[in-house]
Image (cartoon, rainbow, N blue to C red; front, side, top):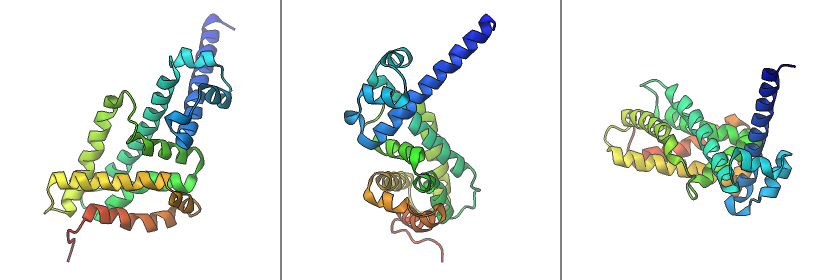
Length: 212
């Protein structure tokens, strides 16, 4: 085996260790939040040693912040993909479905997908360092949502629409953490979406009449 091959293998092994630590931290953070996670639990779950955390992240706090940021980025990417897929004539129900779909899929899938959503739900209370790196994705998601909502609710000003969008996001975060989320997780994605989308659409709509 050449020296280059050995370097490649070490690099791949290092990446697997790093990914394993992120996944373990994400799972434990979703269950307990930052205050309930220990370094030993994460390393035991990942099958790694304490030195690996120092090497790849520097500290337990940096590892937890990286895991939260990673979860948030995955969520934003999924939401942006759903919203970007809508045409300019999308209905309010279609916008609500696209907005909620990453959470719907996570509730139906359970496991690591739901762990990601639960971690995202905690972010509003404990924002990670480096939040600014994701500003562009937040802005993209907000711009697309506002454009689609404005087309459906032309009489509502932008600040009010931003408020309603934040309320809808808060509702989805609550579902990830509240006991009702466990109840919904027993249903299919189609059933969850059928029950959830009218509620999210209602948060967007407020008391604004839509259609004839």
